[in-house]
Image (tube, rainbow over all chains, first blue to last red; front, side, top):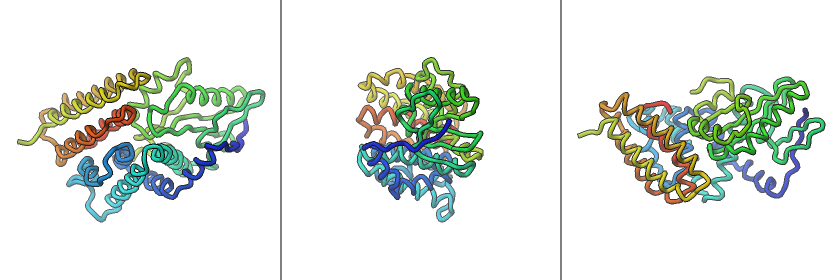
Length: 228
Length: 99
């Protein structure tokens, strides 16, 4: 088993600019240190129609109301920063925001994984002897001898599709057939409950026990932390 | 008179049903929409069963007002499917519940 840089096609060249956008980096950094409620706020605001922050402050009383941390505290400041950045993404228009959201989840996964392990890479193929390379690269990989990982990142549970599951399962079984080990999984910025129903419907003949699912509520597990 | 948790759950479920209808034109995702309705409906009804008679937590009435209004703005069926997975989590957070 070996990792290889993916050859960029036209789409990848355009997408690379989005991945490098300062807004993507800023949102991912804010979310890396966020609580679950703050991450739900980000998902809602980036999925929503309203770009008026007052709407979202009303919708999240535990972050902005009388049950929230006091104004001026780091926690409250982070909630405000997440809201502002999320609305900047939402304001970019449907096509662009969709690409931004995907890039944010990848960057977030990369940052969280880097807390726990190294080296963490993006957009990499995994090659096995005697097998053709998969068409799509993996979003995030950990290329550590004896403890390699491959993650596909999705903004929503709807992104969990049969082909994604099969590719991950193929990689896992490819590693096993070479006497190695590869942890494979999905990082989904969506509710675990939604991801689970999607995964069960889309898995087909794949035994999903071998595929790790990290949903919005459990993102800190990527960093080796208990969920905040 | 302030609302109870049961009142707010009922309003959340009604808004959820409106979203599910908005999502219907995406025929490929009908099963997924049905699955979401099943699991999130059960989760929300469990909150009503456990805490229904409680008065609504501070800010929760305004949160559900805002959630209903935001839900009503969603007219695109694909956006509705995304929102179907998100809005129950927002409501649960307002109730002080885990997802």
